[in-house]
Length: 174
Image (cartoon, rainbow, N blue to C red; front, side):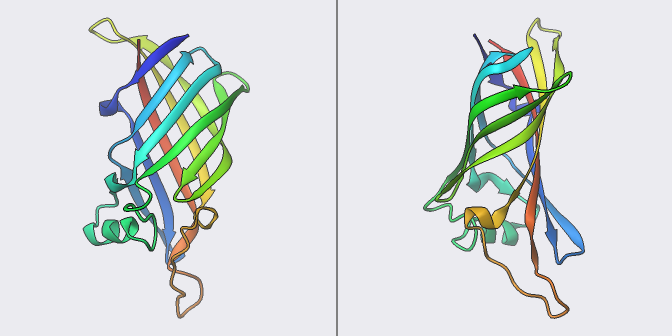
């Protein structure tokens, strides 16, 4: 089984959530690790763990980021990391997979399944073989005790329930 090194410069974790029921707030986590071993062309036997330091959250608003790090949301003092520990990969048609694993946010761990697309492999100008993947997912923030909200006078709430996210990942083969 091969091991892979995440290329941080060519990888990202982004997310979006509805704001006031009319628009979306987008953000990213500026730092994360992704330890994986397996074969790029056959993920079904791969193992992986993603660790995201919540303190690296960036929504382009310092005040909002501070609020997200507080006990109202992620409570980074007590729960500094989000983790996803893969329990299985299942191949579908072509380069499409389904990944299932245990997602831990704050004090809650739940089994979640997300779509993965293998984007391909190639050799860079320095002779390194690289592989790319895209992961798409959606979770309900309340499932992870991220429950802070404010009711709007006109109806609805300030922060939406669904958090959509994407991981764009590039790995260097070891």
